[in-house]
Length: 387
Ligand SMILES: NC(=O)C1=CN([C@@H]2O[C@H](COP(=O)(O)OP(=O)(O)OC[C@H]3O[C@@H](n4cnc5c(N)ncnc54)[C@H](O)[C@@H]3O)[C@@H](O)[C@H]2O)C=CC1
Ligand SMILES: O=P(O)(O)OC[C@H]1O[C@](O)(CO)[C@@H](O)[C@@H]1O
Image (cartoon, rainbow, N blue to C red; front, side):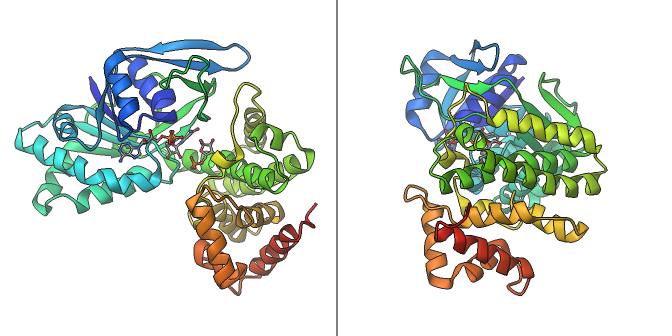
């Protein structure tokens, strides 16, 4: 079996590419980073440090690399059995046209073998959104054929993989936590679902996607933004701060109550899930910057993302949201001149005021009573009076 994986970054090399390769699949990475691609194409292998109480280094072997802007991508799409991505949500639209070209070529060659495409991004039903982009770039007359021969499989990915500096200067070396969870929607595959150790097919994907995104990612983002407010640079140091931890745990519990009500989760098990996540944030073997986890705050403040979607859930089920509101105010307070979206956010707040800027980004009605509360917390943060 052959796979083309877009994005030879942290999750690409440290999680998805590794699982595929470990399962005996021939993996080719496609990336725009020529240095990384050259290294993969020359060495055909790279080390993954799996760090936890017992750390190991595993070598991922028999992999290849191509530039994702080259025509080679088209030839690969025409022949592979699986396409996966870990490029970041904003990049999916950019790679969709070449995937569409590859599909046209696949059809031209008469390749009717099943192809499954899985976007492994922090998004709710990211592959379905990706499918839309691909369909926009495909001739109308191919849509029916594509629906019959190509599966667009949504997924949830969970493994913390921050960028790490290699002691030996190896640009391919990657460091990952021991935990990993890759859940895929079994109802969306075309053909037989491949057996890949570590990839779990389920028939109720939304419950898993929301559980991950609105627990781990919600808590992680709030840890990052409160860490920034307190001048703390890493996630571990931030979560070890008792005040931050209390708010983060509280926000995950508020979001959790929504999830428990929506998906009928077992409350005790969900609280244990939250506890485990807090421990993962504390991992002493990972160095994870608050700026990485807080990256692109406008995306994270979007209506369907980790901060606002749980908040909307608290309206729906009429449950408490005090800690989520603090987290949202902290996100609005995030400033980082190296992060384009943080710069854009600051500019929008200066131009429109925090209330209107927030409502525009999050899609929330300005008359909603929580808007005033968020503005108040934000102002205390701006005045350095939030404790
Ligand atoms: N790092 C993590 O712990 C986790 C990340 N994710 C998600 O995985 C995705 C990737 O995240 P990371 O691996 O952390 O980012 P990363 O920045 O390490 O990797 C992204 C890779 O995509 C490549 N890329 C950019 N444009 C491209 C293009 N047009 N064609 C091909 N490759 C392109 C970049 O060069 C880079 O190598 C994101 O959606 C993220 O939310 C999900 C779970 C965990
Ligand atoms: O990758 P994003 O969506 O910017 O968010 C960073 C988040 O993604 C992860 O890297 C993996 O889930 C988390 O560590 C963090 O919550």
